[in-house]
Length: 206
Image 1 (cartoon, rainbow, N blue to C red):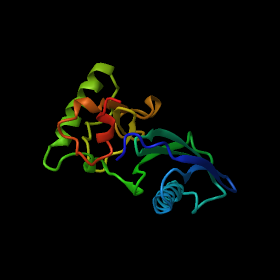
Image 2: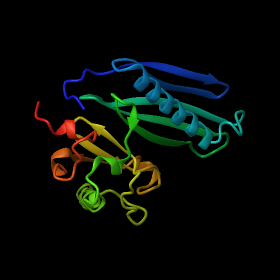
Image 3: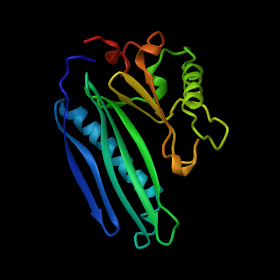
Image 4: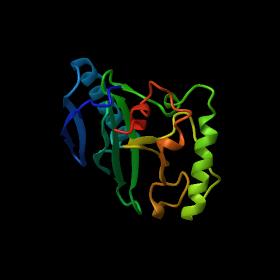
């Protein structure tokens, strides 16, 4: 990845139907057409999957879904975005939000899972779990279940020089706490980061 790569251009697109209003990103310039097509296809696929998982397609008259996105990183050849969908079933006590992230190499449009960021055999899970447990203790996060650990396909995004691991509602903490998020400096992990991964350009001091 090229650390001097300019950001890609993104425009908001809106999906509107009965009880459905979801805004999602579309990449329009800044890389090659094939990579743009690949990223946009994965973005729309994720948006559609979240809408389905939240039950909208089965009950569009009784479930309201709204959604938006956040750009977490758009520099150094890495695009990291989070898709945030909120579903509210009729007569429910409260709705439920889901956040899922996509982390792209903008040259190829490839979306990287967490395990693809690290050198094979590096035991990155143990390293991350140790750091997260320490943050839970220091920040006094009110956990409601045994720590679930870090999976190879754990939810994460990249924000400049930090890897941010996060958990869904109820997965670790009570609903009122929101989404537990754990920012980890890339410099804490530099000895296990793959040279060709999305985190490598973030290590450069420029």
